[in-house]
Image (cartoon, rainbow, N blue to C red; front, side):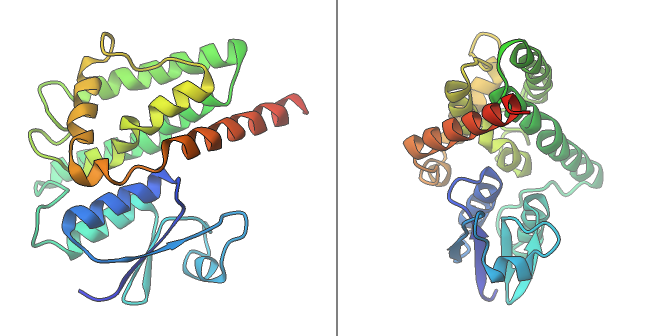
Amino acid sequence: MGDVKLFRTWSSPFALRIVWALKLKGIEYETIYEDLANKSSLLLEYNPVYKKVPVLLHNGKPICESLVILEYIDETWNTSTRFLPEDPLDRATARFWAKFNDEKVMSSVFHAHVSQGVEQEEAKDVVLKHLNIVENLLTGKKFFSGETFGFLDLVFGWIANYLELLEETGGIQLVDKQRFPLISAWKENFCNIPVIKESWPDREKLITRFRLRREHFISSAEGK
């Protein structure tokens, strides 16, 4: 199916979705790591609009934005297990929840992580409301798609690892087994998949990165 390259950073949860998808499909690819503080000319050429990762390069043609890339991979390499459901309504519903994750869940967790005091408590309440919705999505299911792994598991996959580290470095607790038993069970099922387990970034490096980012945002806010 041609030459495949993935432009990514080591820590990006959005790029990690693509790593999982490529590995689950058995697609051979070349990884090109980017330093977003010093973006390469190729990254700027292939993603001139957003200038960020991930970018998938397939036969010299760039595809940008992780959700778009996931669908492209699923449509292009469609002889193996499919990520998105066949039914049009189910596909549209999956896209809706993917957008909810990116625009609501992830952004609210990030806000809570870089906040403190009363602002953090208010931000935490927003996160918990979003996580309640996620919990309900898993009712009666092993994975977001049902009994089998699918598109939304790739999208929500960051929760299985990054969320715990953001809690630790942000001084907040969000997910516990008592309040979110379905998310907790899903995390275990998700992390037991070999491709997932072997692909997580280094834990200590992530902790250092998240601590520095939190300090940066808090000091920037205090300096205003």
